[in-house]
Image (cartoon, rainbow, N blue to C red; front, side, top):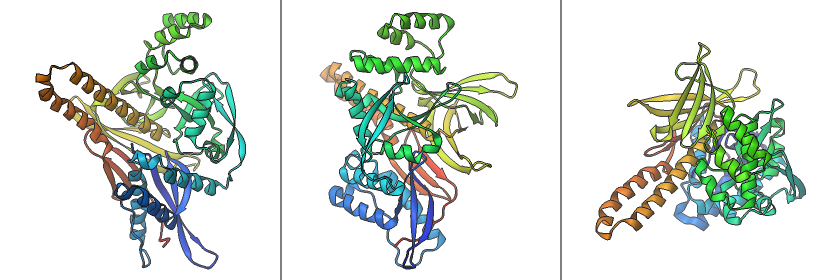
Length: 444
């Protein structure tokens, strides 16, 4: 799956000998990952091309003459496209060449050398596991060490992930972003100090029924239980009064399995809740509470009449979406993001806009739901083939394959520049990243 790479800014600098060069700000999920010159990226591309050949997408060409502004903008757009497309191949993103490049880039940008350090990884109950790490350890390694230390079976590690989150004074919980597997959590925390983020473990799947696969392992059962209690306390889950009494009874009895079995029946269990935001549905300027999970985006929209309208946007009626960077707010303190999605409402396609600083997180959740649908469709197709008599297998196989192809098509596409950086995907879904202004010139 493509990662949310972007280059929203470029800065022209002067070398000591008087020459000029451009440094590009490489962002992941809207946060600065590192700064790189064109020449650095070109050398990295050559390294990848030696290893993976034609699987590596085309790299922006070198200009031998002075670049105009339009040429500089085109290069910036092409570099964005390259970073997006190179992540399509998991063999590349899992390689030492890919991970080593971004490790060095992140460390060099934030001037953090490789050394031993302590890192706190928080659990949903507020406790933490203190690890002795190297500052160059990637998230995949830190997650694996933490979960194995807790006794989690290795085959279940992929059901969890590291996240950066914020605990607010009023008890609210904000998930800031999912940590990429190749990201350096220690360095990212240092670069995000002003946000006062913590590093924590949360389950990473959007289908609540997948809990069942984790119930037989004590460590995963404990993780699910702690997160479920946290989501009740922070008002992510919406139990009725009677359900709340049952949950409290089961919690007193420490009956974790029954607690999780009951909470799976409750509204918004297993969803990711976003901070309150603004939307343009059913009219401009409405505030909304957003819950995403179980194949829907659920919005509790406060109307100008002070009434609340509950709206569920189903993922199977959503054709495309895009994330757009709108620039800084008036006070200059925070960037403004929007996520807009194209939705089929009673046979008519329309765009719904959510103005939220968690737009990239929401986009990641949507992609996760699609990937789970793809896996489910593939599994159902295999089971149907096993159960069908041989005489009917061939006639049914084509329709099964067609259904899968429609979903898999969501993962193909490229970038288009038309005054903004746009990532397009084919078929059912479109992921687009749009950024307003760019500057830049040649690095040689």
